[in-house]
Amino acid sequence: MALWGAKNFMVNYENFLSLLLCVMAPWTAINLVDFYLVQHGRYDVASFFAADGGIYGRYNTTALFCYALGVLVQVPFLATDLYTGPAARALSGVDISWLISIAIVSPLYYILAQRSGRARLAGGTGLQA
Image 1: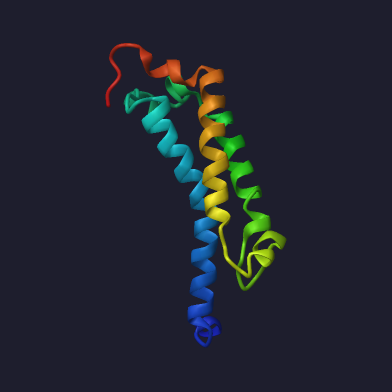
Image 2: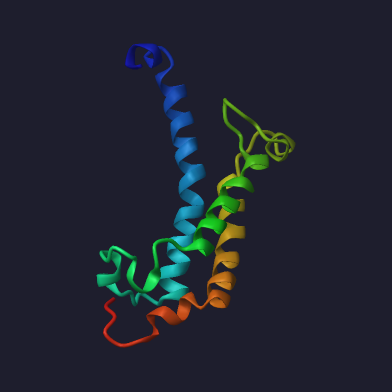
């Protein structure tokens, strides 16, 4: 693979970084909103290591839904060598996909986490920051 990509290293590297940006932007938005706005930095650390997920459960369906949506809403705004979406083309090739993802995922996750009761999980005693 290294020999195959050596001639176009910078192009391949830029494509890799663009892919990372696509998957990391919604993930980062969810983590920051959860830490600062939903849980306020109070987590039950022991639950992270519990086989059944402790008070949080095995997975957070709200976060998974918002993450998948965050990745999908980026597609029209992507501007890469592999794919350029219609919105990015209309913007003369400017890639604002990560901004769109953060702008949609952040408030959506906050609202859905409040409705699902996730914010109340950290409300008890014995939880650590």
